[in-house]
Image 1 (cartoon, rainbow, N blue to C red):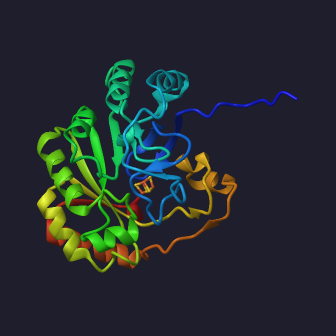
Image 2 (image 1 turned 135 degrees about the vertical axis):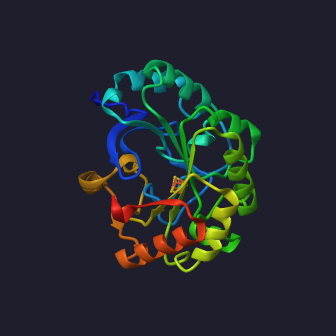
Length: 268
Ligand code: SF4
């Protein structure tokens, strides 16, 4: 019997993102999930390949074919995210450049990254032509990093912070720090504010795990929002979110300590 196999596209959406509006996702990683972190709250579930190795995971020609077939004109932004850490893809710079040429720079390019590779000058150079880079920073100390983000063995907080500082110095676009608040870090606001003040981002995005944690890997989770969450074939477990009051208090405290513009998932 011939099976009718539908190839999964490396381009998905547009989906509605609370931070970015209508966002077309570009997945340079695909299958299996691959990341230098294995966050306890990851919407992809337990990361299948935890690594800092950079390589071409999906060819540039495949991504561009998928992009041309997509509804990119309907999106507000083009977001590099997907089934893992996008800066692990060695062809990220080439794909950004080709997409900017197809769209004639009419759609801002956003990269969602965990920041673990930014200390590498080659990676910094690869992302430099994006418009917005949103860097995850959940932990103010190594112990919290290990507890929340469970990184690859070569990854340490001091290198992440040093990489984000270099990004802030060299990148001309907007640097956003995204913080996922959970029981392990919700009482570490002052310590996080100290790091934020060293990095001096343009904006802080305050988040909490609104999407459940799937008990298995399924590529659909890369863009699962709202109704899509019901299509995940594995069981999911809900995660501990901040209450609205906790989120408001953290936002006020962070604002007081950093003076920065703060956007919050609770105000979407
Ligand atoms: S950095 Fe992102 S993709 Fe990687 S494990 Fe954490 S939430 Fe998942």
